[in-house]
Length: 277
Image (tube, rainbow, N blue to C red; front, side, top):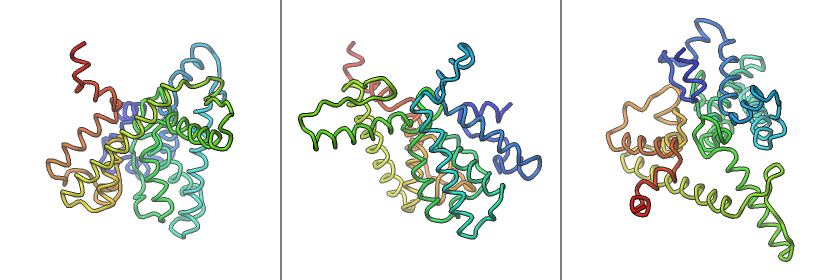
């Protein structure tokens, strides 16, 4: 029951100090494959689940965000699998593939369950894992992070600006699926992205001020605001946050709240205009 709730809420808490590795060693590795499936489901837009369950419409692959989410998960998992096997750290077998998929899905969905000490993996895999700290799952899911739909919109906006530079007189629109995106939504997304990065940098600086090393400071900040759980360095998947001093813990708490409740929602509470109305 605990792991079911923790999986679907993408919380990542476990009843064992070894997290999911305890089940792999003492019960069955198939538990990992089960969790991979349901973590993936939990990070999918729940509107698509509603259409499938209530309306009997399997519209998952008609949704642009889900298609990118699905193929990105496959691509990243296989890339990590090839990297850790050809580096000689793991054998070219199903177990290594399971570790790759589990780590990718766990971090992509901001769940944070752990089975392997990924901070000992090759540098390429570690860099990919660091990027996963930011992305988050689909919009309308239980995940933290920036959300994939915002990243898609940002990339579309970059291509839009490139087209405008090449053809200044051209008329272009930014679409996700069949829907044109309003300028206000684009501005809001850009603002959210900028705010997110500013908070990430500020928290990293505070952590480093309290003598946390470079990697730990960066990943602690990214993990906190993204609601991931594990990071790299002194807060790796086989470590915890208990050794941090009081101020870094408080900053982490604030970042976790900002990341989970959406930044603008929390910041509005501190606006004078909000309380005047």
